[in-house]
Length: 311
Image (cartoon, one colour):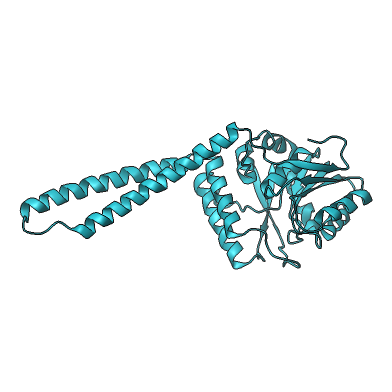
């Protein structure tokens, strides 16, 4: 088989070369497979692009893609996937925390007949903030995208060619790679790998970026939030109706008790807040439809390295 590696790159000038060398060393030990590496520079502000150019000059099977601005990890993955031609595609991080020397475990599991394989970490070396974000993402995937409870999702995974072909058919402005994999197949497995400590820098996922990723996940592939909003609206309307009946009966039975101003304001604030929340969810969907109709790109490529044609 031919194995294609896709690595989104951001602030990785000090780690990327080591990751690539580890891939080369690993694949040299599996002589029955050939390989290629796609490095996608997500408009990194440091010297990452220079490292990519140097690696592409050194190894003819390494290809580089340079974005015109920062589009995010999932857009970088989509760009890399579109430039692969391997029978199996492996996606991993550029910081060295995802062990490239254990890629053979993912390949072996694919050869057992699975369509997608995710690395499972027994001991994650992310920060507490990042682990909490991963937990919230896990709950969202299970509730809205139907991810099996026992399936562990990570940024280190391998997929078969037909899964990649289905994924790259998605051309809307907000790609969500996990949702695309879950949409393409249910034959997904886990393999246990080590998770390393970060040697240089810190995670590029801030609270703002994590929130944007979650919103993208549950609005791109599910209408469940709209259904939840409808249920909440129905419940609130029912509560309001019951409270209105209670107020009328209370007024008839106890006419001397003044009407409760605080209760009225509480109800107004509660129902007003719920209405604004539901309108916000609806507006999020409408906004994404509007942006998609305007053909906003998933990414814009400034330059391609070691490629005959530009996408």
